[in-house]
Image (cartoon, rainbow, N blue to C red; front, top):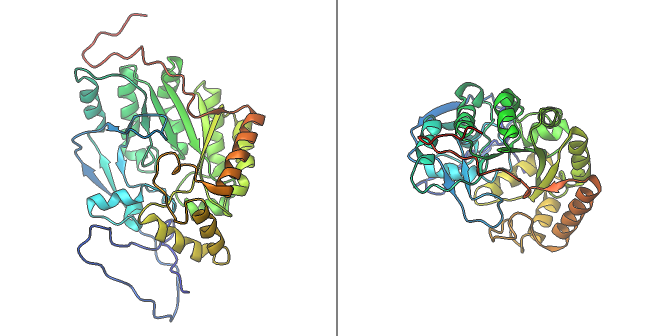
Length: 352
């Protein structure tokens, strides 16, 4: 089986048509030769969003609202469950998701407007539920930083999930939020193997950089935990205990994990990645995924989609529970943030 290699610094070699496309084209390999394709530049488009706070009613999530300043993610994680969302913009969940990004440039001002609406009830807002708020383009766009400033100005609690070391740029804001019990950060840590990180999450921060982020955040008084996600059978699941130990040593206070999710177009992209990098292991990996997903590669049911079912998933859950208890790591649900300080735009902040 001939498998294409991805462009340098990208997670996938494919750019399949999105599921809404009226027609599709297929590239055929003539078998003459294979070479590493050239790098592919990142394009950033601008969007004036009409709404910025997304609501959810999922019992699997520890928050009911989130903000994603960006569509698409330059980190290029091959397993990313958010890839199918790019189809809504007539873009491919493959290379387009990694290279054709959309920045919601009015996110901070729009957030202030939505917080000022009569009847708004304060509850923690999550940054990073779909795409990473600290992906590389944040360095120039600064939408996440400006969003944090709005939340700080109005004393609104926020939770952050990221695998980007760029979060340390915003220590000044995070320290102020932490002093008022308004922030918790979860650093996503999937592997301690630099080579696996390179092919699985090509433009994300290195494992060492993420552990440093945990260490610095904790030293600066910012509540921080580790999210071991996703756990992939026969790829990184054997690292689970070591990931938790490394995170605890760096200062993590809480921990959580998720089982691999392969919705819609993510499944064929992930299968192609397995054939390119782990051809002898690919069928075993997919077999264990199916055993944990009722015979399919994905199960969207609440209560099952984050953890999986069956013997392998149960063993993974047990390993996580034992290691977390041994290390004294609390659960991700334990945010303990203060919503009583919230003052909507136009309101008067309390003096004390």
